[in-house]
Image 1 (cartoon, rainbow, N blue to C red):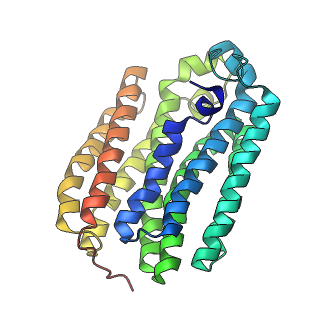
Image 2 (spheres, rainbow, N blue to C red):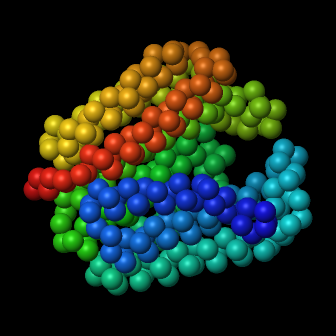
Length: 291
């Protein structure tokens, strides 16, 4: 694969854009503004992935020598300029989106998110728990920016509230999974000299936090059905993720072995994907009942 394509991790960037596509279905809006929004999320995520590799290249020289920078396919200078170019494209597109929907917030969100992604790679990633929170928050931003664009385009605040709700859902579950992944990688991270939350405080506190986040997210699941935002099909499909969430919390316990953490990480990812499917099907005959 070409180094400049590989360094943006296109699969990861596409996954981020899927949040916007989900909001397209939920909001029943398929205009140019939200299509540009999906492209913005893709480009900015690509920039974030690239700048992350810029700051990690010394570690990658040892642990992942085949990546574009340590393998010599992309220089550090070119990668850094490439990341800034991608962020710049994202910001320009966000200004176009702000013009299309006559609201400055899409551009503000993109500028703030781009700054956060840069400082995540430079500083926050190495900070215990803070790095996890930043990753989770950026995931939630993908839903919120789509909600802002669609809300402005339709002049309807209800979809913005829904995007914030779905964003919080993504934040809580992503944060839980990020913490679990750190517990899974604890031995390898120790060898690399990393200072992750589980390394500094053991597995008990991270496990408790993850379990609380999983349970809170599970309790959030029926709300969109109870308030007639999503139809009964949403709730039927969500039964599967709810069971997976509760099972994951049950087996996590307070001092899980790496094998259990790996299993929970995979289960949470599967449950989140099924939840996203439920969001789409639950939006059929979407009831605009939020005041």
